[in-house]
Image 1: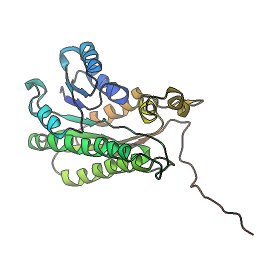
Image 2: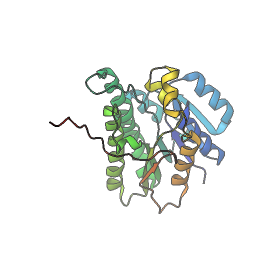
Image 3: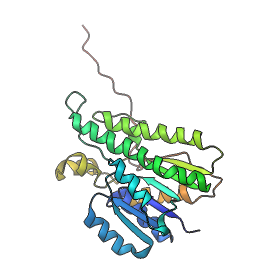
Image 4: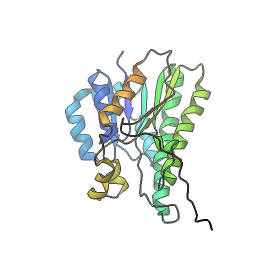
Length: 252
């Protein structure tokens, strides 16, 4: 069965790799992102089994219009991959920019909620569908400077679990994906275009790649309909959870 797959943030990194992976299997893909030239390039490569829509997921009216105005061949969305998201800054909470926090909440949380609310009624009515939320290991493993970014990803992880509770018996599946260290434009965005700082996390490490994450998403979605993968936490072999931090004072 050919599926219609909507991928947010499809202009780079995980989103582009996920869109390519599903397209390679014969599915129709809806590509969304904010950078028109990248959307045009990707749609040009993928051809008629793709549809590109410039979209900022923070714009609720634009999200609603996009879902409403899709061409007929793409109108019945089988898979929503909520991939659009970002991290901004790595400062401790008392030094972080409030606007950065708000942007992360609007993109990672409100954007994902808006897409789900627009797409989910159709899935329930048709009795089929799959929502994939791109969370992070930051949802469960706190680290210095992760503050609001980690909180937004914890929101997505919990939202995924609560959607599962609502959807029991509705034949609509939900999967939460939590990648660890992965090389993409993520760090470049976090460090606001500073290439040296963006390269630091990957020095001397073989990180995950967007293709690795795309494979995990495709696998979860392509299992038989009676199988729901609730949550996937995936790290590179060279990464693992560490010990809890303890700040010690000098004792007399």
